[in-house]
Length: 255
Ligand SMILES: [Zn+2]
Ligand SMILES: [Zn+2]
Image 1 (spheres, rainbow, N blue to C red):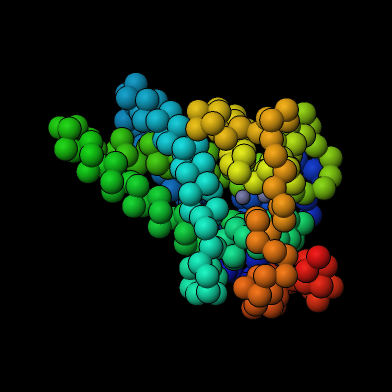
Image 2: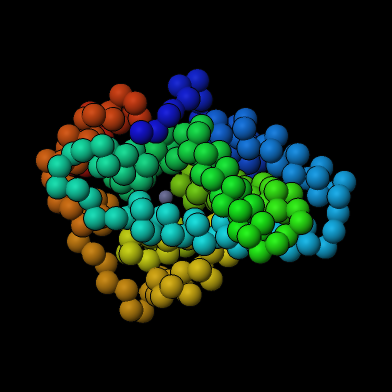
């Protein structure tokens, strides 16, 4: 279940600074940005070279998590019935593939998902460091998560908004857009990364888009399901109000 912030209104997304502002104003950022500021203060106040290694490890970890969540959670085979899991999958990701131009489905509006997941990782990493006899497990884990992984997550949100927003784009933004378009419109089993540089992870897992060898699957927008699959029709109707999916968009989605 996505906990949406109904007060959140998408920002105009015509230029880079609009998209940056949009992402900095997404609901989870009210919790995450202060945590980044605390991590930065700790980084400066108690500096050791280990902090740099911790932050870089957090960045690498987030690139891996971005890939694994997208590939194995969001793209998992859907249930036969419209149950709680399918509702969650649809509002988290399937709806985004169904209506890629709908900004309400671009993600990042769930205030609690990332803060909760990141605090679980903070505790897990602290525990692991303590297990290996580290003297400052909480400090290192806090820097890894909130100065490494979370800023990388925020750049992921920016990259995803950039990939889908129309408007002026620089060379990096055009590259991000092109790589993500392959995932949506050529082969949804490739290019699970979104963030710049994430192609390294797709290459490591053998899922990088290759224009010479890819096979465009049928029903690409509905990830292999028939566009008029009764489960999809039910879910589109269910989320029509929440996500502003118009009647004509729902009619177009059937073909
Ligand atoms: Zn996807
Ligand atoms: Zn997308």
